[in-house]
Image (cartoon, rainbow, N blue to C red):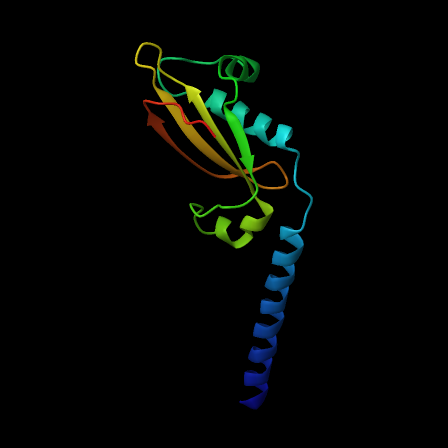
Length: 133
């Protein structure tokens, strides 16, 4: 019985140490540049168009919505599990771009992007005014 208990304790200790080490290493990886993060977010926004205005290319969305995007490297309270585990390694791109012509509707979207350029989490909402950062 003592061997089983000590084996289980050793397994648990190694597992916890491995998770802590993985978290530290993951959170200290080099981040992508702000320009690259914005390019990833804009490309995804073009693919998942909302409202009557459809953008054909990322350049078109950026040209028609100057100042649409900012990048934040902290303050990710809205992330869900499991993204919360490695939020220090994430960057959040916030976008506000026009999706409705006459109605002047804007779509506010946030993208959590990891150091590999993978979109980990998103959220968005349609608004009647454009947010200025």
